[in-house]
Image (cartoon, rainbow, N blue to C red; front, side, top):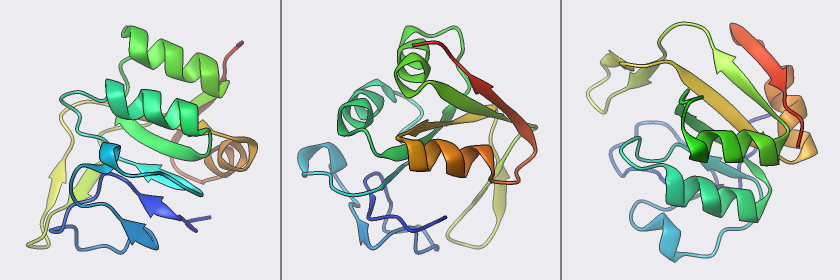
Length: 131
């Protein structure tokens, strides 16, 4: 399901309607509520991931950094993650698609989000992780 309450890391240049409410600047400075979509700045996802872990209801799209402590902490808290096959594309404001330079993963927090990721139909591998 794509019924998102909040996109906490949106851009005013994003051509897609991702959520009912979009925070286009300083999403860390606002209260988060409902089901959150999080596509954090890949340069430093840590504070965003920590915030989503505390919030407990949402899905994060992040680099698949299985070697990083923040990634391991997040998937341990979530209990699962989805490693996406290949390099995903991002729709740019001008309509072009740019390919991500690294592999990506979805980290779901909350049972509804775990089930959504598990049954999303994307090409990749869903993995459970012991907490």
